[in-house]
Length: 382
Image 1 (cartoon, rainbow, N blue to C red):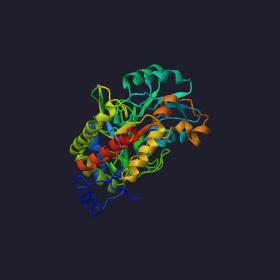
Image 2 (cartoon, one colour; image 1 turned 45 degrees about the vertical axis):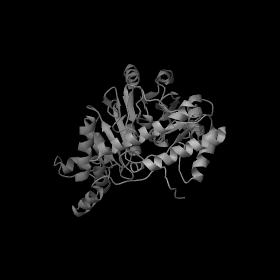
Image 3 (cartoon, rainbow, N blue to C red; image 1 turned 90 degrees about the vertical axis):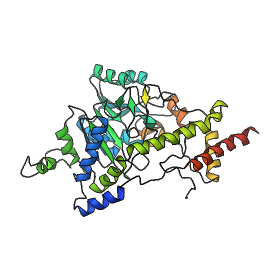
Image 4 (tube, rainbow, N blue to C red; image 1 turned 180 degrees about the vertical axis):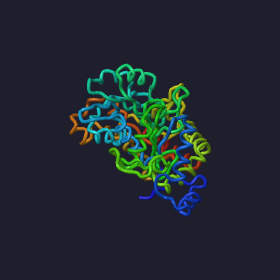
């Protein structure tokens, strides 16, 4: 069903189509092409990372991080249950067990105060997810990792451009992963990137990304032929996707500025409903700079959320809830989890609603959305 105001809408911000044509006419549309290298250089320069490798998805980047951490069957990785399935799947594919921890009620991020109790002799890594582009408490997480000799993999899928105490998210842990899925701030349909620190196995990461071969060394003239030297998969991005992405990265600041304005509009227009106690908003701590990835509201209960979704749907406005907690999913149950284990996660996930949010969302359409929400509560209280 097409909605007059959709939840999300892919967009063109600059020279994306021109760059796609340039990639095709240049004769290199597969991986390790010129636009991929431009994107990697931009991302490393913007974030200050030692190196960034473009991948087919954020999922692929997380899988690579799991390989680089040396995860094996029986290992454990601590993460929130309130996340996308890729966070857990990437570790499961290495044989590691996801160990879920509850979230904070203010930011919806992993509760850093619950992590240490979840550490066992089998724990190998901590995988914080920066929900909505708002930073987890990385100082505490990194201190715990150092004390217990653990790796930290940042799931920064939603967090390109966000900072924690001045540091770019995705660059604080041993590894970071970004997403360029069409729902993110900058997009290429499907795509991602793996962020590497100063001492995190660049050469092996290149091999893993190129199907386990030393093809990157061959193209640099370091070997006279390339061959199979390690495990790996086809994690490398095509240059066509990189061409589209580079057109977006060039417009990163204007895109962020527009998203900031959209976020500010929602906050201002919904302030009376917050003051009346009809809705609440997640918190952004003062020491966190975020990238305006999404706008979510918290309703009083699940029934109110369902009724509001139906009300908006009738007006051809699509608003959606977000993650179903992984521990309550069929796969979570197979891993031995059950409903009731993580009460904050279950409560907030059942009340959260994401509003339409995309680069081309007009001020008039935003006013339509917020007026419809106000109308919903006016009808319920009249």
